[in-house]
Image (cartoon, rainbow over all chains, first blue to last red; front, top):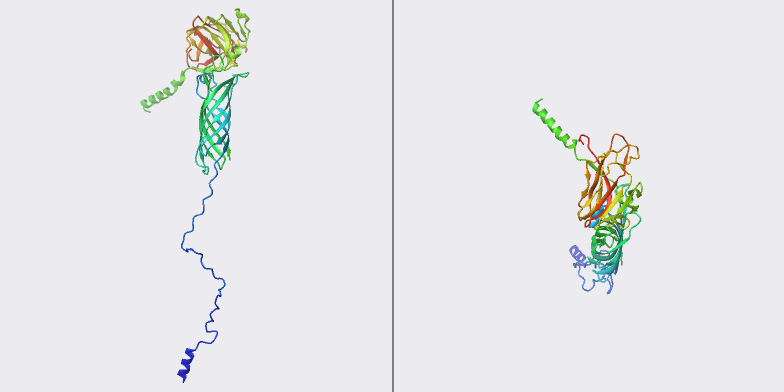
Amino acid sequence: MLTSFLLLQAAAPPPYPYSPPPPPPPGYVYPNQPGPPPPGYDAYAVPPPPAPPPPQAPREWILRFHLGMGAVAQSEHNDVLAKEGYGGSPRLLAEIDATWMASEFFGIGAWGSYGHRSKQPTNNSPELRESTWMVGVQAPIVFGSTSSSFRLMLTPRVARAWSTLSLGSGGTSNPGWAYGGDLGIYSPRLHFGAAMGYLAAPTSAPGDLGRPYDMGGLYFLIGGMIDG
Amino acid sequence: MDNHRIYLRYAFAALLVVPFACSDKNDHPGDARVLDVACSKVTTDADLGALPPDSGCQLSKVGAKKVTGLTSDSIGLRLGPDPGEVTIVVPPLSLPNSDDSWTYEILARGTGTFDVPSCFTTTTPAETGAEPVRDTGTCITAGSPTNTFEWIAVGAEGRLDRSTSGRMTTRTPVTLRVKAGSTLEIVDIRIVSSETPKGCGS
């Protein structure tokens, strides 16, 4: 009898709360459960790389301003001045230029510069002073994309130039043509750059007994730029 | 001490001293653009006495002209190809205390030859009161310019009496002459004073 009683107890479900809860009604949604995955979802897929920044728009214009120094070009007249003690004086330069970019890599523009030098061999000798003015056109070629940190700019130039050499009361202006160019490196983000170039500017002899003269020469420039 | 080593020491010391004992003269080129000062006053009078006492240029004959020099506001002189002559009275200039002789140099170019017809043997007393003494031991009386501008020594070499102290001054005319067919273009004149190092005989 005891055995039957024990067998009956084993077959019957355990009383609540030990019995499992009843099943939920149809359509019941357990709370705080994630929804079904979207169609095509792959848990092991590699996320796509972030989209690149949009490319910078090409520059339409560039404006530069420079200060620098230059050496006087070799000429027979400069050799005679050197024998008098007036050689070896550097030329201080200020230059500005503006370029319209016809394409991303080529432009056309205008430029102007002013140069000055002076030398006095001894305290009792008069001072030699020279002022040079140049106004002309240029056709820059730009290397490097607009989004680059640095860009190279090769700038051929032609200009009308005037030089005034004076040993006292003020000399007369000697005109001539200047031609040459420079190579510069610039940072559009820093708005800063530098350039080195050479201009040949032959002109007639200053004074009746002067010799052929060249108001150009090698030069170095540093300065700022803005573009848009 | 070994005599051989002593002799070597003396020889080494002599090698150090001898090169500096009698080196070349120390030349001191004077101020530039003296021609602008000298020829700011120009006369064509034949009388040398018409020249101002302190500075001036006298142009003689048809082949001597005053023109502009290395700049349009500086002075140059052109002689030839017709016969021409110019006398330049160099203004009073101070010479370095250490120097004891001087000579004139012109920065010139040209063709043919030119003459320096006079080597003056008298000078005006120096303003400081000391008497400069000149001799005519060296007198450059002619020259042949090249086609490029070069400094050319002309006239007499002046010697200075260094027995007195103070700065010395000098003013002595220099005359340059070209004959027909020769040319001479002068853009400047200067005085080059020299110091003879101690230990060198005159």
